[in-house]
Length: 123
Image 1 (tube, rainbow, N blue to C red):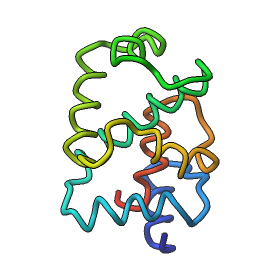
Image 2: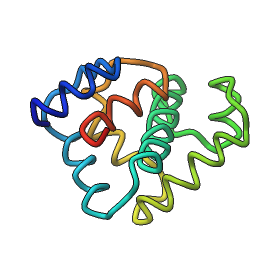
Image 3: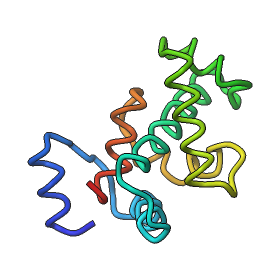
Image 4: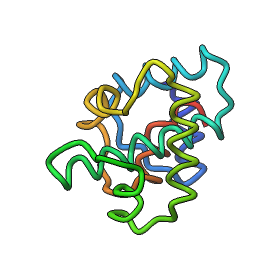
């Protein structure tokens, strides 16, 4: 993450709290794939939502329904985030591997904040 992107994130009111590492590689991957930032953020939101639930449950979430219910979010939004995740990262059936990469770098239990933290390098 460059100083310029850090400053841009701070100007936008985003406190990244991330170390340079896996999250930057994740951001670089979506940039390399030509994914638009809004679409990337939606995929990152799903990684956050899924990961927060996995941490709460002590296991992988069984369904989109379970994630939506646990987080008090609409089922439509949860399915939208999951669909975007699958489009951006078709090689992953769940965010488990990506969540493991970034888990220690995110400091929130809010999927949107996690998504913003993960996407700070591309905003």
